[in-house]
Amino acid sequence: MAKLNRRQFIALGIGGAGIAVAGNWLRQKTIYSQPVPQSSANPAPVYQSSDGLLELDLEARERLVDLGNRQASLLTYNGQSPAPRLEARSGDKVRLHFTNNLEQPTNIHYHGLHIPLTGNADNVFLEIEPGKKLTYEFQIPNNHPSGTFWYHPHLHGLVAEQLFGGLAGLFIVRGEDDEIPELKAAQEEFLVLQDFSINADGRRTNSAHMSLMMGREGEVIAVNGRLNPSIALAEGGLLRLRILNASPSRFYRLALEEHSFYQLATDGNSLSEPIEVNDLLLTPGQRADVLVRGDKESGKYRLLNLPYDRGSMGMMGGGMMGGRGMMGRDNRDEPMLLATINYESAVESMALPSRLNSISALPKPHTVRRFELNHGMSPAVGMAFLINGEPYRHDLIHTQVKLNTIEDWELINTGVMDHPFHIHGNAFQIISRNGQPEPLLAWRDTVLVKRGETVRIRIPFRDFAGKTVYHCHVLDHEDLGMMGNLMIEA
Ligand code: C2O
Ligand code: CU
Image (tube, rainbow, N blue to C red; front, side):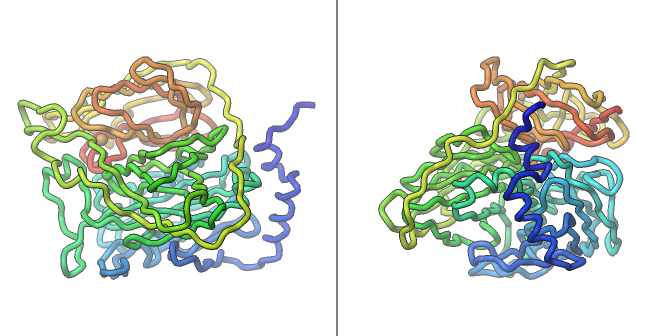
């Protein structure tokens, strides 16, 4: 008999822990999932599935939100920014009764989840008009990995603006990672990183056209909707941080004073073992799970955002300037304070896990394609962000692939700005960067392609046919054309 791996084992519910948890769910007899109140570092409520179902009402509307020392009028889901955290398990059904009370049309994308791309599931071609309702409904496959995913609006042309308003929330799939003893024992916290542009009376301010080309960044950085929240770390203990970059354009390069991060997962997928990193780069859309060890002298340590140069537009039109041009030169040479880690009473010293979940390399691809990323003049729209020389068009299929095949995509950045490239629905592995084999075997759904760089990724198109998209996750670039329609043919 073939041996089951850990993931299949748990998906089938034969794991002892799996049964205990399922038993707990059955005792809760509620029709809708109930929000669970959170710690002060994590004010947003959490909705957990019960009885195999996660069901709730979700309303998008503008609301005055308290960021700690100031108020801001933000775009929220259920009055919260970040939005309520949703938690389900593989095999669960999800039903979200969504109401759009914004002044614009919108929709919802479930970033990183491997679920149907059509119908009322992860379908970014739906358009929900102001005042209208739509019920999203899908099932998370039984073999879905556990990990950190998220949801946000995805109506082309309005994506950056609506995320910059605050619309984003975590979607956690619980499962095999959470059963690893060291992770179970660790204190778990979530960090949703957002930036906002807010004036003195708490109103969101508009971005100038040039900053849209650069990708808008706000001067206020909120972590879980708070300015500089404090996070407890038990002396000797482990803190598991699950971090999401929910900013439309800002890159975060995270460092914790005197501490390393032990990275457990890239985007929504576990690594095979923890890797030590001192600064953790997260482009828009990316997530990381890390462990922090409370093995330093008891005290307060700052979580910082270190400077990162993602390139900038030189002069528009003709005569591009390489590297740092005249735009985008702000105060990003200074580290910025994001949060404070506070040591608390000692626990018995905890070890790091030595193994996580195994990852297998993908077999050779059936097809190889090239995607050139740049900006330039387009006859139809003027200055635009382009893939293979073309801006996005609703009415074209830019790339057609076959279900159950594996492809290599060569992503070539010939421009002067970095572009994080995201594909909906299927995670991929990085094969090489600039021809150098990628040393770390990992799954991702968003990959940074630096200016001048060529990154080769390998994607298995599995389970779900239909039309979806790939794009730059600097969402102004996406809104300004750096997106393509992908048809996965059954
Ligand atoms: Cu996070 Cu196409 O999106
Ligand atoms: Cu871009």
